[in-house]
Structure formats: C-alpha cells, structure tokens
Image 1 (tube, rainbow over the protein chains, first blue to last red):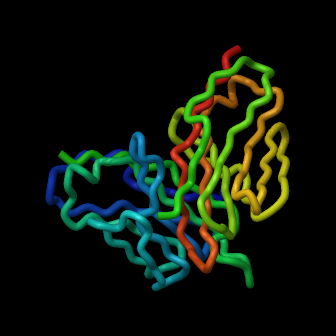
Image 2 (image 1 turned 90 degrees about the vertical axis):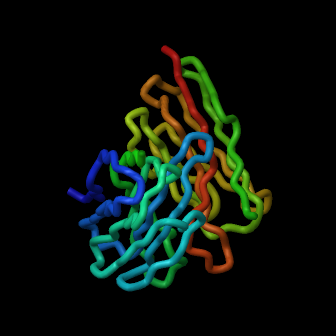
Length: 118
Length: 110
C-alpha cells in the first residue's frame, strides 16, 4: 500500500530535550516536505527536499533541522525543543514530474505527529 | 509577502446544497492544490491545478490564472463532506515551496 508514515504519532517532551520525528514513504517520491499546523495560522512549510542530499528552507525553519540521506526517509530534528514548537506536524511527499516544475504532482500526507513541549 | 486568502472561513449548509469555496492569491503561481482535512486530522489531496478545470465525482475545481483565483465546488453536498478544505499554491518563478490558505471549515447538516 502506498503510504507516508510518521513516528511517533504523539509525543510529550520537555524543553531542551532533543527529539527526532521520522518520516518514510514507499512511493519512490523525489519531493518530501515537513509542515506544521497551528490554530489560526493553518499549515506552514518548515523544510522541503527535492531529492537525496538536497534540502531547502520553507517559511518557518527556525529551530528545526532535516536531512535526506536516503530517498525514502526525511527525518525532522528538533535539537532543543521549546514550547512554541508545540504543534501538529505533517510530512508529505510527491513525485517530481520529469521535465516539469517541481512538486506539481499530488501530495501524499502522513497521518501527523502531535508534539507537546512542556 | 505573497499570500493565499480563502473564503469563507466557516460555512454551514444543509445536505444537498451546492457549495463553493474560494481561494485567491497575490502573484503568479505554477500550481494550486486543494486539500481536504478530515475531522480526525488526516489530510488528503483532492486536486492539483495549473489551468482550467478538474472534476472528480461531486467535486469540481476551477482556476482562473488571469484573476489569480480558484474555486472548489461540491455538488449535492452530504454530511460526510464536512471537513476543512485547504488551498495551497506553489509560486511561480521556480519556487519549490508551498504556501497555504488558512482553510475553510465546512459543516453539512443532515
């Protein structure tokens, strides 16, 4: 079954304790991305990756790191989480159409990770 | 800053009504996505448009590039259509990120 998986689904942690949220897709997609969703602000892009070893900042990258060492995985790292990073996080992936503009294909979303930083 | 505006923010309608949700954006785009977020939180991609019109079942999405505007229509609405509908754009000029509208919370009453 084609899917994007995220782990953990729920996480409560404390300020400053490093954490990683994993994201994996089994569709051989080139493009992967992380978003956060907050009440009243909607979805905002944190980081995205156009392919292995290629990453770029979205609109709200501060406090986050990513890596893309393998095509299927795109972990989100919070080196020193703070309460303002409490949010619902989504990972997504899509194909890059050959010769077409990046990311112009259907986005497949993971189920979300609800993070609370105390 | 480039922006995406959706309207209305909230919409309550009766089963069977024709629904229209609007999305406007500030500058040229290379693609526009319509997403549906279920009450449980999961997000599903409904359409990706770069021009014209697309239809899937009771859902129709249109885009007017000149007017920088897109609409999502639901015909013969049903309570299971109750969800948050989100518009997202990929800006033109080689940009690769996505910018999202704040969503339209739709409730269809039986």
